Image 1 (cartoon, rainbow, N blue to C red):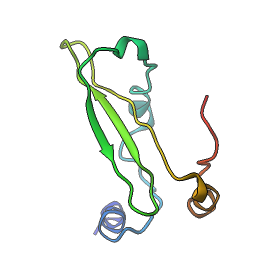
Image 2: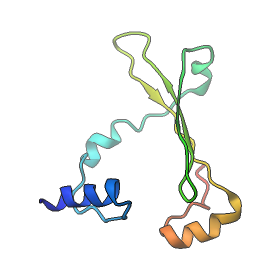
Image 3: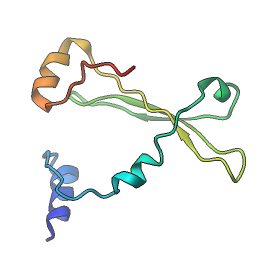
Image 4: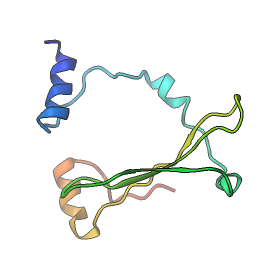
Length: 104
């Protein structure tokens, strides 16, 4: 089994964290989706809720999805990440992620 398939199996079937040596999406392609969003322009638009609910130790991520109104428009996804504040310090240490740093 190729290394990437082994990692996928470990992550999705065994819930074991792995480090990816190969990125699935090249960074330059990923960055094309990093566009600024005018939140005021979304008022009154059709929106679908896509919740990613947490279990006991992961992050809850509600993701409003705004479908395109014309063929030229793209979908707009606005993920929000939530987790209990009382376990924040523990999660930062355990996951080696700076969850406690707010983005401006």
